Amino acid sequence: MIHSPHPATLQRWAAGARIAPLPAREGAAPPAISFEFFPPKTPALEAQLWACIERLATLRPQFVSVTYGAGGSTQERTHATVLRIVKETSLTPAAHLTCVGATREEVDEVARRYWAAGVKHIVALRGDAPNGEAYTPHPGGYAFASDLVAGLRRIADFEITVAAYPEVHPQALSPQADLDNLKRKLDAGATRAITQVFFNNDIYLNFLDKALAAGITAPIVPGIMPVSNFKQAASFCAACGTSVPKWMAALFEGLDDDIETRRMVAAATTAEQVRILQANGIDEFHFYTLNRPDLVYAIARILGVKPLTA
Ligand SMILES: Cc1cc2nc3c(=O)[nH]c(=O)nc-3n(C[C@H](O)[C@H](O)[C@H](O)COP(=O)(O)OP(=O)(O)OC[C@H]3O[C@@H](n4cnc5c(N)ncnc54)[C@H](O)[C@@H]3O)c2cc1C
Image 1 (cartoon, rainbow, N blue to C red):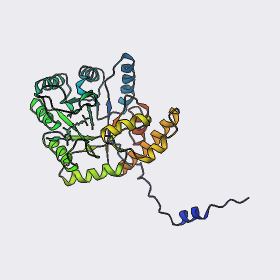
Image 2: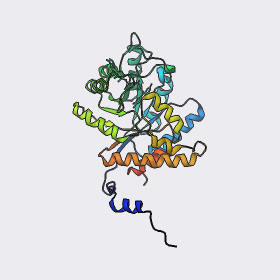
Image 3: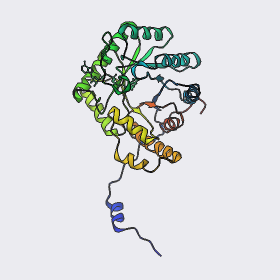
Image 4: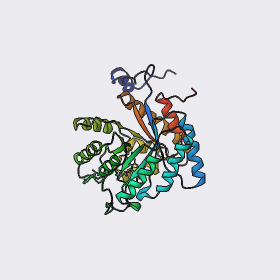
């Protein structure tokens, strides 16, 4: 029996728009990459983190950053993790630091300890209040990230990275006020921004256009999170103002108990996201690793990043 395509299919083949291919990889320089880790709570999680760091270190990231828990709750663990990176690896660490729950003097002291230990890169953030409470500045503290950036500048010649929000920070007075705030942080002495996680490339690329029009020329590095645990990611995104596309929810539907397929879907969707960004000229990527190396390692390879031994 001869099977012919449906007439509508034939019509699409004949008259549908042709999608241009992504640019060839040959000759393209690999992007600069960086990785974000969180400080572990238990010895087992610490072992997991170090296995993750060792695997990703072979990709020679520009820097690796370690987060600071809400309300400064991980101060000691963040510090210990960053220091271990300094002592035991050749990686360049960046320590996240927030304004929450501490006086300026206390925050300055943490920064001085970092500088003295050889940690010269700070990711300067306002932070959030613990347990979902509303943020109020500490009476003697830095109120906003721009104040912290200015404070760090007075302490030492840190490299300073700040946060950017392509979908607008949830507490911003307006998109314009949020963009003005990003400019304020860069004008105060930060040299790079990393974005909140996003899944819609158009939103990010439009944000870059607006930032350029506002006179921002510092790199605004996309923060990429390969999502394999969709439910967890969706609740995190709801809290931080990141929109989750309907197609993404549909792809993960019914896969709660199928980790393997979820991981393959995550790899495919993230690979598509970063390849399209790369085709749009983006040559720096920051990965939220969640202390798990495999997906991120694969995505970096797809971007053309090779380990030392390859
Ligand atoms: C890459 C990245 C890394 C992160 N790492 C951590 C981490 O390690 N630990 C952690 O706790 N959180 C972290 N966060 C989350 C971050 O702390 C929260 O998003 C927080 O709510 C805002 O921090 P910020 O530095 O962007 O704040 P800011 O830049 O200070 O902005 C906060 C809000 O205040 C507004 N604003 C700024 N200045 C003023 C002003 N003068 N008057 C009125 N409104 C103003 C801004 O528009 C914005 O809405 C990270 C976020 C990103 C994107």
